[in-house]
Image 1 (cartoon, rainbow, N blue to C red):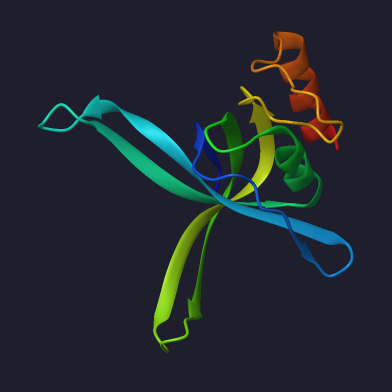
Image 2 (spheres, rainbow, N blue to C red):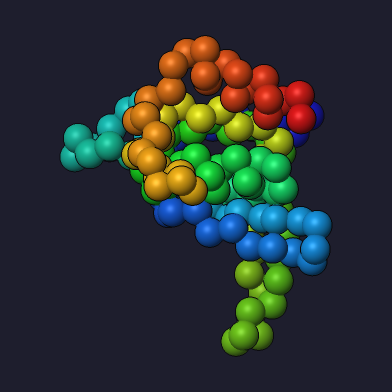
Length: 134
């Protein structure tokens, strides 16, 4: 079985790309702190690349920004490509199938009003239901 669940903070602002006429994609990285510290007492953080498509990409693009805490679940996938220097680059990333918005960092919506920094528990549940039932 290939199922991954991560809770962490987004490392970059959302950059939505259109693919053809019908698809949108977001590539970002989620930073996840490990529960233990290293020998020097420093927090250890893992950085997991994520790929989000279509309606979930729209949801993230419209509601979060760098530093927002989210929960994602999906499949881990690996791929490779040849870069400009002719070297093969291997990538392991999470192909996101579900998203829960945990907080929003004062994301400015299209009407230029500021959304609340933390949605209510009902709003989180509604967003999670909308994401999983869409």
